[in-house]
Every structure is written in C-alpha cells, then in structure tokens.
Length: 261
Image 1 (cartoon, rainbow, N blue to C red):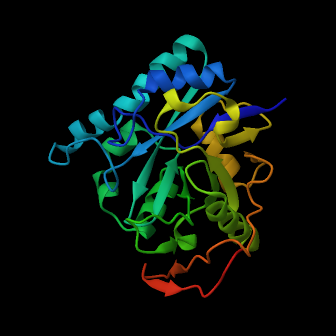
Image 2 (cartoon, helix red, strand yellow):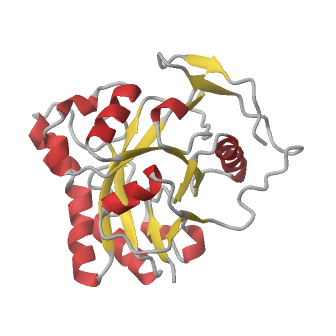
C-alpha cells in the first residue's frame, strides 16, 4: 500500500498567484484519492499576498491563513494537511518543510537571510530545504541558478514545468545523488479533473506529521515520484540547451558549462 502526497501548492489566501482556497484544494485532493497535502504558499521573498509593512507577528498570522483554512477542512473530511512555505531569491526558490507558525513567529530573521543562513536556521529548527523546479526558465527570469550548496535535495518534477525542464533536473539530481521530490505547484484546483494532472510523492508509510517527511529527506528514506512515466525522456535533439549556473560559497553565479539532457 502506498500513500500519495502533494508537496508543492499555493492558496489564494496567502499567495497572490493562488486561485483556490485551502478548503477548495482539500476537497479536490480528497476526491482524487490523495492521502495528504503540504501547503507551501509563497513566503515574503516571493509572490506573497501579505502586506510587507505589517508587524512581524501580524504578517505571520496572515501568511498562515491559507494553511489553516486547508487544515480545518482536512480535519473535517479526512485529508492530512501539513505546513511549509516557498521562499524566493529572485530566480531560484526553495521549499521549506518541518517548521511551524510558532517557529516563524520566533525567527523574523528568516524573511531576509541569505540562502546559506536559511539552510542553517531550518536545520537548527529540525526542518529540510528542497530547491523547487531548479531548471525552470521563464521570460521574467534571468538565470537558472543551482543552489546545490543550500538545499537538501531537488524537486525534479513539477507539473508547472515542461518535460525538458524536468529531464534536466532529474539527470542533474542523479549525477549528484540528490534526494528527489515531485510536486504539482498547484494554484487552482478548479482546473484539475483527474489524478494524472497532479504530481507528488508516493510513500510507503503514512506521515504522522511533517517531521516524518523531513526525516525521509534528511535520511534518504524511500520517496517515490508520482509523475507520468515519460516525464524524464525529453529528446536532446529537439530540446533547446539550457544554460545554468552554480551558486558558489558566496552565493555568486558561476557557469556550470554543463548540459544534463
């Protein structure tokens, strides 16, 4: 028996780009047979819906509304709902798991710290960091930045990407033996009609809490990718080469001069 989880999603209550409430997401995932979801709304370095000028504790209260809306519904209908967030540093973004509202209340420095300090703080708090969609490239982005020094693994499949982005990410993670995860990056559950539209992870045991997922990441437990069978088979002859950069020990860009497809 396996247990299916969404690891990357956004609500309209906390992310400006979100279209569905937490409750709406929960009902959809329950209907489609998921065991649970991890709500990862955009934090203050990204497309967050919370006014930045609010006092810190008010900001955190507002930020957690999307998760709390989902959690309340999940308790009612029997879907596991866990808390996380997605922090952005311009072109590269990171999914943070394992911490909670109280931790955020007590760590205002997390809003504007470096990638290195973020990883240190998250580890000190008992959490984990996954680089989201590392090979995503959009018109509004300048560079593909690989934060291999500043995360515990990579989201190698993202339903908002194309198969070229994800094929790069998968081969990159394979070469460097990175923990691999997958998520839908779902913003709007009203557009979802079947389970095949959603990415996620399939686990051998049910999560009792978000710390169980963190443990799988940090201790390299079994995490199975819920993605289409052909997701990592982009044809290199038909695919535009993606130029990528390492983030060095000073978080500066260094060309990788590599292709992973």
